Structures are given as C-alpha cells and as structure tokens.
Length: 428
Image (cartoon, rainbow, N blue to C red; front, side):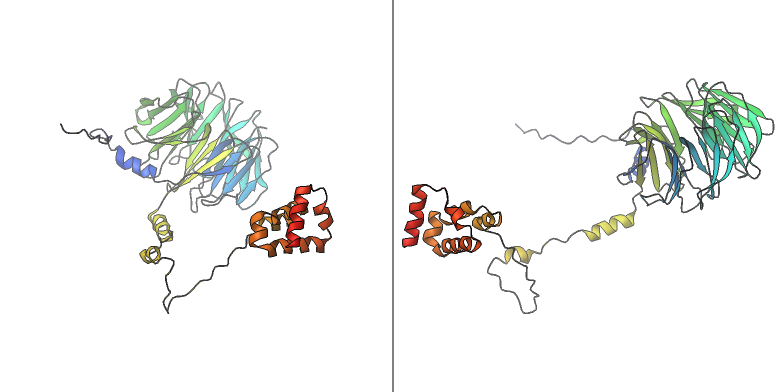
C-alpha cells in the first residue's frame, strides 16, 4: 500500500481577480518607523511639490518632517490650545491651521511667526484648507459654520450656515477654485459653490461624517463615517455608487495613491485597508493603536499614519537599489580552506598574519585579592591541588598578603585543622 505524503495547500486568487499585482505593489514597503509626538496625531499633509515634506498636527504644535528624517526640520508652536488641520498651499510655501480656541493661523514654511490670523469662529476650528487659487482659505468649525477668508487682507469673504452639527470634513476642488465639499456630524455631505453662496448638492451619508475626499477627475466623491465608506457619482447628481463596510469601527480617514488612484482607508480598529479600482481589498496594514489620520506621498514613496497614542508610523517604499546594497553588504562566509586547514595549518609565504590579542583571565585568588577578601584568597591558595602542584602560587599569595599588611587578618579566626595545614606547608 502506497504511503500518503501530505502536500502543502496553496491558496490561489479567484478567477478573474487582479489582486496579485496590487497586493505585490502594496507589500513592497519597509517596516514602519515609529516617531513619538506630543499628543494624538489628528492631521498629516504632504507638500504637493518636491521634496514632499509633510506636516504633522499633534497637540499644540505642528511639525514638518522631511521624507527620510525622524526629527522635525521645522516646528510651529504658537498655539495656546490644541492645533487642528495643518494643510499646505499648492506651492508648499504656506501652511494654514485651525485651533481649539477658534483662531486660524497662516504660517510661512521658512519662518516661525504667524503671517496672518483669521478671527470670527466662536468655537474650535477642526478643518482648514487652501482653495485651488491659493489666495483664499476655507475653514469648518464646531460653531456649525463654514467660512471663506481672503489671504492678503485677512478678511472674511463669506459664511455658510447650512450644517446643523459640527463640521469635521473638508475637501476643496483642485479644478474649480469656487467649489469645495464639507462633511458634518449631521450625517450630510454638501458641495458648495462660492458663486451661488450656497450648496449645489447634498448627500445623506447616514452617519457622522469624518472625512471627505475628491478623486482627481472630481467625478467621484468619497465620504467616511461610522463603519461605512461610500462612493458618490457627482456627475449623476450625487448618486451613491458603492457602500463599503469592511472596518469594525469608525472609519476616520481616507486618501488616494498617485499610482492607479487606489483608495486607502484608516479606522479606529487599527487597520489601514487598500482597495483596487473595483473596490476589493488588496492589502491591509496593521497598526498599534486606533488611527486618526493618514496620508500618502504624491509619488507613493511614503505612507504616514497618525494614531491616538501620539505615534506617527511612517512606511517607506522599497527599491531594487536597496535590495542590491543589502545583498552586497552581506557578510561573506569563510572559505572551504578555513574549515579543512585544521590546527596544524602552516601559513603560506604570501599570507598576512593577523595577531589577535589574548585576553587575560584572572585566577580565583586574584579576584579575591582584588576584592580584598584576604581570608578567602589564602584558603584558595592552600587548596590541595595548588599547594602540591604549584606551591609557588601559595607562597606568592602569602608574600602578597604580608606586603599588604593583611596576613594577620587572613590567619585570624582559624580553627586547628586550618592552622595545621598552613604549618605543614611551611615546614615543607
């Protein structure tokens, strides 16, 4: 009867799926680098232009990091209370941020002091962003208003009061400087047109909205809230296309990759999920704590995730050059001749001999003398093997004790048997 040999089971992708290529692409990231911030990381924003530095909003400060730096290259700390929503302008030269005190500050990346300060909100401002023209700033606040500000004059241009709860999501249009999208805890997503001064489209998400996101073509809109991620078709008047429910807790953030516009979502369940063009999950990143914010570099080189425990997790993309340098740096193993030469091996004339210093180990009595245990050192020197095979060692220890003036202390308190052993050795 033939013996049964167990075989390994290989799990293959389903027929017709393109999961393999996408999964390989997103698996090609290094282990995350952990950077500790001063509080929960509520916003991460990459500069649109090279070298793609990114701003991290946490606690009462905003830190700007380089792609490969673990220390901030710039810090903005002029906040009396918690800072929110730090965002770059399109040219990467200006940064705008809201705060718990209701003020909006505008910073120059090369400086530290605020260039402008916009006042008008009565409660915390969680979302701020530049409109695509770069001369106006839009903000969403807990006072239920959404306001547009003029950057040169620091004057409020308009105030919109169509939401009935906190505004916690904001996405300006990059194609039309008069359009922007807001999401609120009143479960609605609204598209506003500055020319009309009111909303031109309203979508019912069904849960408090945490994040809104426009695709580059701006034909599709993403909204997250509760456990749901919903895709809306703006060309069809805000019709719901897809409703995803793959997270176990509230989905707090979403972003798009540069290659293929893959959708990434982060949640309080500590998972980042990557979707392909047909909204099937192709990869999953695990984090140590609940996720509040997330961003992908414009060239997909870096994925940065902010968590509630104040840790910023940064993953860098692997390259073939990195793999080649790692393989070249691997330590070369010893040659076959090293294993077979044996202890009687005679070096050749052209061989270079490397002398290795021999480490000196202290004997037991030397260690005891070093620690001033004089009685124990004398006992060790008087052991049977030492005093018969190497009597010079015993004599040397006795002379050293006498030189130190501690021989009397080493002999004190001994019994008759121990003293007899010493006398017999001295008589020999």
